[in-house]
Length: 360
Ligand SMILES: Nc1ncnc2c1ncn2[C@@H]1O[C@H](COP(=O)(O)OP(=O)(O)OP(=O)(O)O)[C@@H](O)[C@H]1O
Ligand SMILES: [Mg+2]
Image (cartoon, rainbow, N blue to C red; front, side):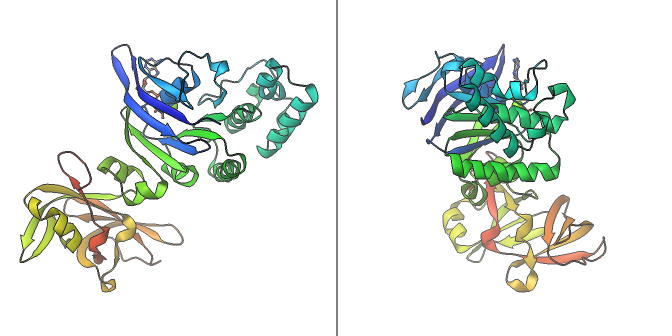
């Protein structure tokens, strides 16, 4: 199984730049998730890797060997397409076995593999039907099955769960995680869903506007986002951002803005003492608002709406003119309009340069 390297891969459609030069190193056997908002270039990246689009510049290497010149069929790659791309006139069994039949694999082997994969995906009872006779979610699983019956080194999945209902999606996510641990193949998985990215990815590559914003383990991205985009994209509910500025008071560095004023940790102070007039954005995760008694610095928030979710509630509040989401453990939050005081620990405050959006 090869390791895969993108070197300065660039792609434009006409005058529209879709991928800025991107560099990417994927270790052999890794499950990598490409995640980012719609239109950021995820599918294009996969299609270039599969050989279905040519880059305008740059090279892709498998184990150090350039592969740009190879036709899709010679790349040892199987892809699950975002729009399924099933053959409408073939039944499901034929769709799934298409690549194996092309390679003239023995009939019994084809039958066994199709049956096994179909059972895993819970579509074994549909093998005689045609794609038009299936629901969207069933078609999506067939598209996945068609790739999985192949014995390639590298699997590319383009949003393979997007059309499934919530239950089925959770179940398929578990299946995929098991498959990831069992197969140890190169798997590159595209989604715009950060939960899928966090739960499946051994490494996550966050993209926006044709650029890679950060790559790392799920924990890296959650705990040490490189910029405001990644901080806001990874984590649910989303991180709250408030604009503010540094102020020195006595020997302590604070950050203050519309409706709040919070002390920063000594460590942050030591790092940033030189920047005390610079404007910043602060980021606080909804889970970081604790009880005031628990030792954080106080912040007062006006409750707008409370969304009850069973084990906890998400409070939609206001701090000055900004909306702030709070994950609240109490099952009976006060009435809208109430002002609540929470505690925020200095270590739970992230700081971003207001001009560049980089993490400070
Ligand atoms: N064949 C094409 N011709 C012109 N523009 C294209 C073509 N394919 C993609 N694009 C444009 O390139 C950009 C990236 O498209 P891409 O399909 O890679 O996005 P994506 O990240 O997969 O989005 P989504 O999550 O919606 O699937 C989009 O702005 C899209 O409109
Ligand atoms: Mg896409």
